[in-house]
Length: 58
Length: 433
Image (cartoon, rainbow over the protein chains, first blue to last red):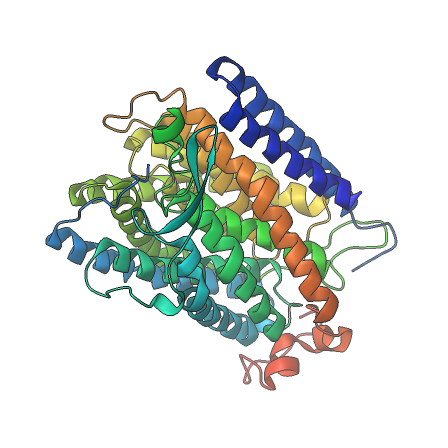
């Protein structure tokens, strides 16, 4: 779960970079937002993966 | 906006810039006091020594390797061409500042500011790992931050790297703007703090069996609030020096920058004091202190391009963000962050970066609509590159050189366990401390 969350973060960044480098101006903003959205989902996954399990006090 | 070539700086401005850089250690002292005050008394000397030690390690590592990869606009760098446009990825300076003339040149001043900034960024995760992070592994983790994660991001944002050139190469506003280091210093320190918090796990006794957090209050509110005063002075120096060196701001803009930093911090603390008063009947000193720092962080990105009223709004939002996120992180995300570094440095750094696109009004800015893309690219880079890299490297470090102190050390207190003496030998120890 941790790994997949970090994978989404990296993939979101890759989408943003690709949009900036290779797409024309009209499509860029949409793909940048999509990349950030994917990163937001990745953050949710990473945070959930680090929740303290019940019964673990440390 | 980092020009492709270094902006010329008049001699008087260089002197002023040097004086601003010399204020930055006050920011480090401020954060050290805040982290110490928010920690427990049995780990107070350990925290102070850790702050001094990681600042030292950060400065040495930056001197050895960091500046070689951060560089400065107009100096050698490695670039690739994508779609016929250059993407400057990493600087190509010699190690140990060889060949760098230590005069009043912009590159020399940038190297000095970078050394201070690397040390400042290294102090940020200490607040999150307070009470359980071993001194030696904190030093080793700092080497990763000051030698790899910080200089790479700083090159992209400040050293003539691809983020700073998004305006020149693709027409996105002025390129990525962050004069005072909201992302390169504070958010990079903040993502490292988040990684460290997860790797260390919460302090013993912080959570009950059913994941309910227990209050482990800081031991000295005076340190926390005094630290805010120090941080304020240091931030003004950091913001002014950064704006002059990395954005080519004229020295006269320092008045606006100092006013913005002050208004941002004041607004954030006011917001926190009002919200905690409304919710709990009395203002909370630790939340107000963290919010003060959050306001300084949030305004640092756009300190040279925002009008004062906007800085006040940015500060008010930052204070609100810190106040609620401290509770959310502790209650819902089971993150034990005694120093509040993650809300005040990471979240407010991200907010400050976005605020530039909302409120930025730089002279000759051109297409400010494109500024959104440049700022979002900076955030995406932090989350998609710096965060996974920092987590991965610190995870590796923890695997081979455990970060967390042994349980008996945590129970005894970091002062006695790692230093052999307490911070307050004449004070009576309480059972719950």
